[in-house]
Amino acid sequence: MVPQLTDAFERKFYYLRLSITDVCNFRCTYCLPDGYKPNGAANKSFLSLEEIRRITRAFAESGTDKVRLTGGEPSMRRDFTDIIAAVRENPGIRQIAVTTNGYRMARDVAEWRDAGLTSINVSIDSLDPRQFHAITGQDKFHQVMAGIDAAFEAGFEKIKVNSVLMRDLNHNSLQSFLNWIRERPIQLRFIELMETGDHSALFRRHHISGEVIRDQLIMQGWQRQPRARSDGPAQVFTHPEYRGEIGLIMPYEKDFCASCNRLRVSAVGNLHLCLFGDGGVPLRDLLASDDQQDELQARIARSLGQKKQTHFLHQGNTGITQNLSFIGG
Ligand code: SAM
Image 1 (tube, rainbow, N blue to C red):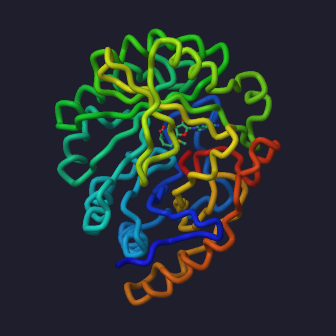
Image 2: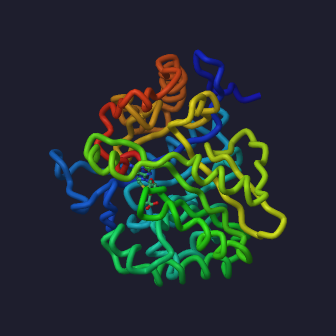
């Protein structure tokens, strides 16, 4: 039996979100509106393929069964396919997922699948190409849509789409999103806009609770589904007349943190116990050689003792989180 990572509140951790780069080519208004800029340590290097191999092995040996590759934009790494293959070397990792803006999918998604990728989350905040352009700073709506078609053709049976819920931008577009998923096996997930240090004004203007969507879904006969052990934080709803599903990610809702099963590692190798407000435990000094694996596992397990019960986001805490590009949202 593999010893399971557990914190002081008896939460068990099966799910690692691993950022593999901070670089992104999109300029989403709520994340990197001015585009990615290397900050301070201009030539800091992101985790190498070997370091990623070691880190995922350590987590797999500690009971992790799901790894999500994120960023920045993970598909901007030239060795992205090799990274997927390296994670796949661990038999204990049953799910390898990516969160992507989708700009490379039409070209590369079949290769990712051959390398072992099992799930894809694509970020699409609007189904209107002009609004998509306005939010992301990139006129790539049709390219991303072609990417989704390519993913289905490559054999992915279901795709998740992330949409950040924003008052007056997309909060009243539920019907067009529902029409889009009527015949498509897409789980469309509305994520409540989270407050980060860089974007307080935007947050105050556009934050809206996911309850507005939940109320409409329930009125239209959608039903909430139970949650499995390595599932992410979404509340999932289904409807007999739709092939697609709706997910709601509501970090401001009471008890959101009680079901936390996730740990994060940043692209420079710091372990973050929460998306918000912790400085990170450096792991990189233990990623130089295979001989350090026991020590690495011990440090990860020990660090969990510091994980707090909640993110305190509802009290306006944004911690050190300036935006979500460095840790993967
Ligand atoms: N580049 C990839 C992408 O576009 O999906 C992965 C990184 S991105 C930071 C991960 C997710 O975080 C995206 O779905 C993005 O919309 C979401 N995100 C970023 N900032 C956010 C915020 N302030 N509130 C809610 N979601 C946010």
